[in-house]
Image (cartoon, rainbow, N blue to C red; front, side, top):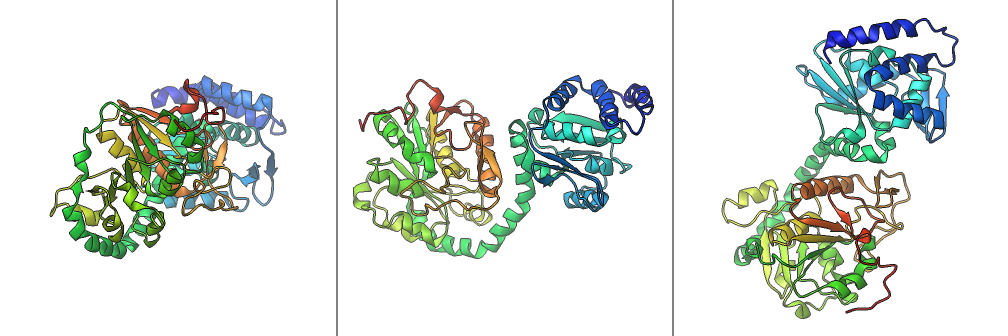
Length: 470
């Protein structure tokens, strides 16, 4: 809608709202309702429903020293200096002076949009509502008519936002309060904010990476190229086995359903639990450079795995591929030191954005599998555990406040910031490879866009299964 048309539309509405007495307890809602009803009927209907049914959590308005709102125990804005807080949040975003469009993920009490609209060069402020109930309660208790009526304001429901728009400001509290339908876009914004810290982390570990690469280089040059696996299985299914807690729930299913045409690809952390359950993978994948990765293979009869392939990156401990008795396939990931090495030796580059689960999926994809099944890809703390029972690192999950993801039952489960990034990057990969059928098992783990739950297909769930190994 043109700026002038919108201004003409909202002016009489504001004039009407100004006639209400200041003592009217519904003054704020009436003013906000008049504008929202004109600008977005769908949004207003959702907000009206939230208000009529009552808040989904305890809401408390704080009067002093500055007005604020507490929702589910979290302050939506500072009780001491809301304007200063908005300045700080906008400052964190490092918005270029030439920016004309800024996106706000989570509007809170309107302080951040209000602050951005003061910038003369800003032509549009995209306000993405991450929680409709929080916004409804905010409209009930606070007057938003100034920034809502500004022609430069664009209101968007979080569930309609599919890609990240920058530059942006992420409301820190609304990130934690994002409703399930808006969780993915909120996580995408959160992950983007974490990216500089991740890069700094890898820079600090640059010395370790260089050490690993130099030690592995002689053997790496002699081993096979992972690209030898391209189009080697275009008929069977790929069973990608990560090391999340739900993996063990599917051991019997895997043993019963597995056929000679299928390829079982295991992350190294899952190797011991799988072997103990009587499942020998076709491929084992390892990428982590840490010293303790050797523990994934200690006590394992490697001679019995002479037909199992090891896919490894140049950064792993050099003694791990040396001890492996089966075929070895080397690959690069998109890490600066390895990019330089790729100029010396041509090897396949495999997708990896922080977790070994990513290379497993990429290898399954270029092998040619028409369908990929994900087991143990929980990317969250399930039943209070970090990994599948029997893994080297299985521990109780930390008992402190953690970010959350949505599981297959629509529930929030605790996770870690890095696992949120792994999940969203996995989703992006899956969405870019939709010619493959992606099936995910274990609804207690993270929901992944682009996948179908195995529990929802015709086969019985592991809880219903009474059969043994096939």
